Image (tube, one colour):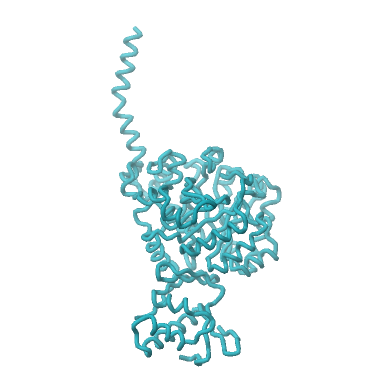
Length: 100
Length: 400
């Protein structure tokens, strides 16, 4: 994971998205590409609120799914990195600055 | 447990359509905010008087309900949407609720400031009606002198503010010969376009607009145009399919569809619907049978319990009384709404669709294509001939 622990994550505010029956569809408005999250990804997506770090999001996975902490952290980090590369989420530093 | 993310336009869309059709989720909603308009297009199917539009508060409540129900694709249309003074308030609410927002407009009222606001409010795409690249032809249809010039002036402004623009050109007698001009115009602007072969009756069923409908034979140049995929149904904004790739232009006679709809006539009532400025909920703007009104009922109560929608959802193309036996069915873009309005039967075949399907099949190399409607009509005619002749003979002998 390349982002420091103090970094928190927030959704890209430009996106259109909807959770439909436990799966989430996200549309990037500028290129019209559609992205799809499964139920676990949707859970993480809903939990991304501009206040939680990857570790905190992983803790929520542990609380809500029967999964080991190290697996949850690995999964959360991988998904966040993937979403970041697609500009679906951005990181916010402890000082409040946003980086893509 | 693995959190997964997949991407792409068509595969994700097809899965989404399949899921929402299976569970009847209202994925795509067409919401007309007003029927008032600053043009008077000769073929228009709307009554432009205001009979009591939803208030701003009512519109916002509708949006809340739609978001809770799982609607994602939202198309605001009219009439002319810029005649709603609360348009931006409604768009801002739609943005807060994370809808994918498209607009349909004639763009006469677009200014740089308004385009900037649309961009800020997250509008993804604006579909603009253009009837010709020739001012006299376009303006004669809209009945507004100078309208083409004003509409075209808006397009670069919208593009400059990051909005996707799509041209929509309903083809009719008045502009049929100008269709290549619209194609060239769109290509010059670098925007996609759709040539729509459908001219519908008024929403109250009256047939005035049909006088402007081009004959099937006169549509041959469009159907034959190699640059248009006219012989195959194309995905269009009717399902608000995001298009990251694909042909620049298409020609359709009734809309959509995706293979994900399989045996269903279309998306209407399955995962899409239409809401009028007065709060009426219809399966589709071309199927004006109100399933309920949002001033009296919640959207979910209408969507999940209206008998009109339940009946519509039970229809399967393979069980249609005439069309299921049609040998050229794959060339047909039968629309249930037009079947009802033009043929009087939601389940029936109707002349326009059959004639278009025959023409498309002929162009695709089918020898003497005949729709089931025409085949059975011919057969009935043959079968009744001896009786008719006997009746004539009897009449003759009686008169002797």
